[in-house]
Length: 161
Image (cartoon, rainbow, N blue to C red; front, side, top):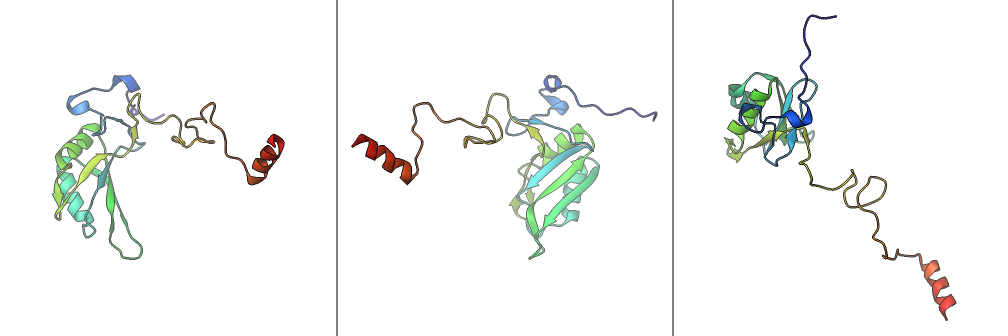
């Protein structure tokens, strides 16, 4: 086996709540580390921004392991977001705190963790939201009649008459 140790994530309840170990996002969700490092999502990136612009801005907060900017196939311009991978939580937190609401090419950037667990006690149950069906969500309310096909409605009215 290798002589190096694995980096392990802290248990869900063991995160720090302030300081450099803070894993809370701006929406109060808990940030989650990816396999390689901490991924930061940058939104509202100007369409003419370059990788050098983002490297210059975020390089001040730590070593950038990977930077990914998607381009529109038709126009060749940036789609408006970028994913930046940093190796440590401290670097990612510094980048988020330092670059959030900063200006790049006259547009205000929004920066936060890319992978998060939802805030405790909130949100819809399951993956289907409130739509119901196979993904979860709320079931039909008791006492609420289901809609019927036109044929079913005719049979009911014939029986009543």
